[in-house]
Image (cartoon, rainbow, N blue to C red; front, side, top):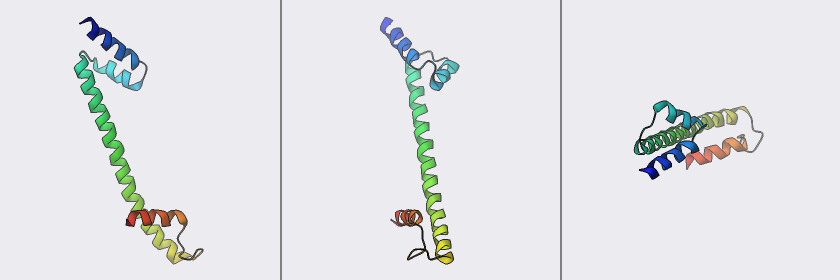
Length: 96
């Protein structure tokens, strides 16, 4: 059991001072198993929200680029097709 408490103290010392360490202190983690479970859940939700926000941004980026591409085609013909390079790049990425 001495190794268990030393390992637990080492883990708590590593996260001390960080935001995650403050979360662990607030929840008063008492067992090593629960702290690892808490870390897995925290990482899962962090990953889920990051991927979810990237997917939403990707979809909205395609929709916006299609609308702006149509508008720039109607407004001007500065280049051969009237679409700026960044919008052309996004449009071709979204069509694939």
